[in-house]
Image (tube, rainbow, N blue to C red):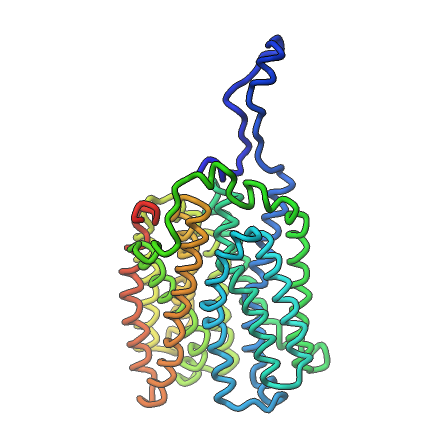
Length: 431
């Protein structure tokens, strides 16, 4: 939409120096977009926000055994704790569109960073399991609304650079994920071995992410943060109609299936390698390699996808990498471990591709808000059973053959849904 574009614009009517005063008064005033300084500030805010969208989760995973012992947490409660993130993403993500309409996307993301900071500060200080879960939920609520609104901010502030900006913050998100997984334990050891300090230190990074948004809060009522009068005048689909869009459903299913694959990989891949005879240290490095693949590719894939009318070929390529990686895990898990880790890392880059398609499958800012909330909330609900089902199959079958077959089988509908979601159409067309 023209009214939401943030590139500098000028009025079509121009005046010559000698034009009459009346003509000067009647001529439309030149219209300019945000300053380069403002756009740089938004870009910094996007990167710092993205860095904070996973450390609350992966830092806890690195210290889960210490947290269990410190809080006297049962194994079943610890299992519930590992399933809380996608549930919170689904439940709290639904709130994002209403909050964005009321306060503006930038203000809500800023509040999300405040919630993450508060949750990370509070949860190590609370002695009981219930309080720890509540503080974790507070941080996850901030992550959930920010998850949904990141594509919205990219669409509104950088409408002509959706691919490159999505790639930038996707790369930062992958970096934050792998960084927290890699350095939480060494940081904890450096601070005396206290798991409370190891979890709480990440609040410093979250607090830093608040700062770039503060100067932008004053401008949230402008057309660059909320739809202006012309944008509001555009015909927009009622909120309930998004459930009638085949593209929205295809994108939600694609998002959910790729999230399922990612959570299974993060939760179970090291154990698959260890059961195949790979050492614990090497298994951890292999997982780090898989996660690290998302850093460069998360920047490249959205840029390529934004230049294509349909994203189906990228979906098929990523799916083929995943199928090959699962086949390798099934046939020779230890012999080609490094190759399978690389291939699964490439396959997991369906996540930044899904975020890019959210920005491309809606024409308006309001449409992106609705599509992002629907696709991510529904998708995270779809992803919840996958890791649990893999654990059940592993326990009852006594090996990894059946679980790996399930992982490979899920890759097929992921490819189908991704091809459907990648078609050149928008949810407004289908409404």
